[in-house]
Length: 276
Image 1 (tube, rainbow, N blue to C red):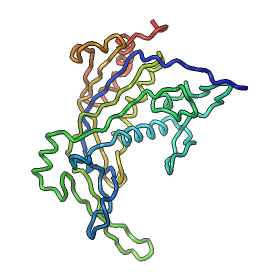
Image 2 (cartoon, helix red, strand yellow; image 1 turned 180 degrees about the horizontal axis):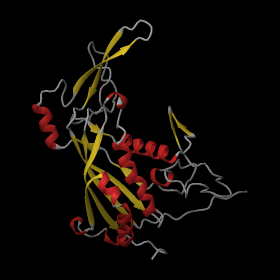
Image 3 (cartoon, helix red, strand yellow; image 1 turned 90 degrees about the vertical axis):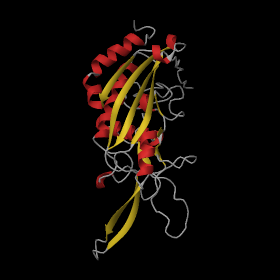
Image 4 (cartoon, one colour; image 1 turned 60 degrees about the horizontal axis):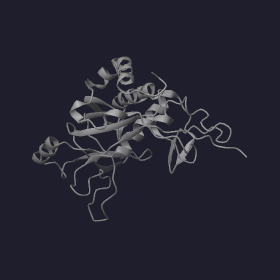
């Protein structure tokens, strides 16, 4: 009978990355249609049920970061969840419970199904991102087509008749700012410091791609601004937030240019047993 080897998940510390997400072009992350009323919008954006304000779901942001990380690494998308395919290290769970997993640039960071690796924790947590109060007020004053959003008209062209079929797309207008974006990266072992590079690279990949839908038609270009890294070691969790070590970066490009120094800095701020 084969045995899955247990792994101890000790939290040595966390790296908290906060940032502003600027909508460079109109941003559309879809929500459920509100109803079947005449004239109702076919393609609404996702909104906070209490405030009615658009927001960026953490699941959408994390999913896009994962997808781009899989593509840049050339990984096979071998796992299906509904209509979405992603990469999961599958290994032999009996003789070698984490075969391929430890060397994968994606799975330890973004997570794997519990039935594949029951003791393999996810390093990255991504929060929902609200509109800033300033953007809320600007959009209220702008008299947009709908509260906080614009309607973009597009036309689908029939390839046989060349007839144009108009459709409406709801978007958050360009210039809106979502913040604070909060991404929490947990350090479980010494290899996680280098795994942080995957997250830093993914942010730049996203800036060069798009978030949400209709990206090939102009929507979804975003920029990360005013990034702050806060290092929270296991021993510093009882300290005031203001006393924790942190570093600030104006952009993703600046973060990536200093990534080697950042990784070394994190090693110094978050001691890991056995790596001193």
